[in-house]
Image (cartoon, rainbow, N blue to C red; front, side, top):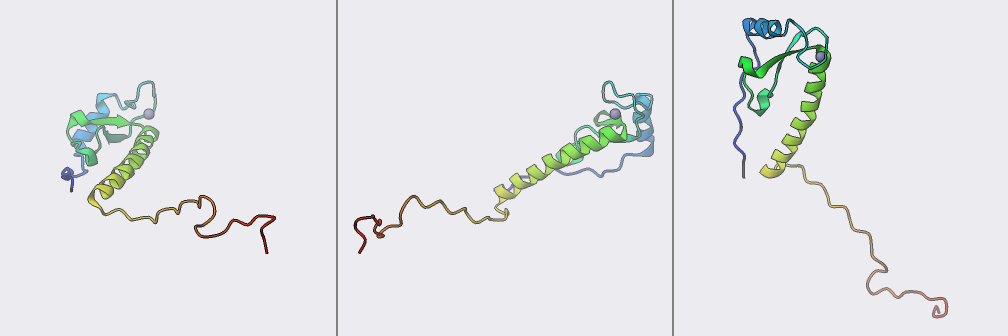
Length: 117
Ligand SMILES: [Zn+2]
């Protein structure tokens, strides 16, 4: 069972589009309440999730907000890869943890204080 891969667009955003995105918010970070200067153009829906380089999928962010978003997406992407690997059967198999013995092993006589010879 394989999942169809979403084709990923090239990362590149043209310099013209980039300038337009940053100018749209007056070079201020797109995160509400953030007064920092927007220097990075971010993909709102990441390319790896099928997002595009179209203007409606782009926003200007300050470096801190861009880094935070990228970091959050990295863990999400790692999780997606693990799920994909499991579905495709390419996951590295782990040895099962042995269960704890539930008492004395079979055939072994439980010693008692009185019965020992
Ligand atoms: Zn910001």
